[in-house]
Image 1 (cartoon, rainbow, N blue to C red):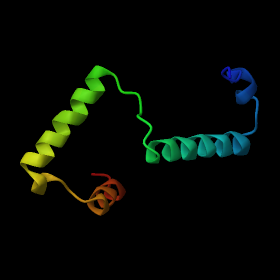
Image 2 (cartoon, rainbow, N blue to C red; image 1 turned 90 degrees about the vertical axis):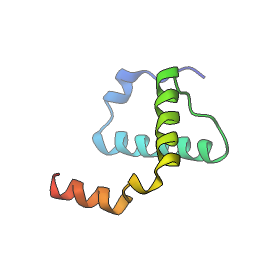
Image 3 (cartoon, rainbow, N blue to C red; image 1 turned 45 degrees about the vertical axis):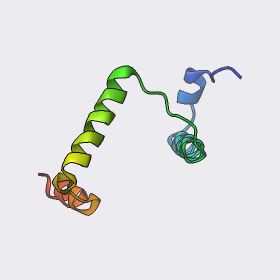
Length: 76
């Protein structure tokens, strides 16, 4: 299947485009949950591996998702 014409998609109303984005995102999550490998280039893979190593070495250095959200809401 070929890629859709982006210009045609841009002509859709905002609500329809948002619904399409949500459907696409949901399908990506489903594929990843089913074991599909997300494409990563070498630098992205290295960064993820480095962060995993850092977490393995010092798991207490991470902050919870709740704390991340609180910091974002405070603007810090």
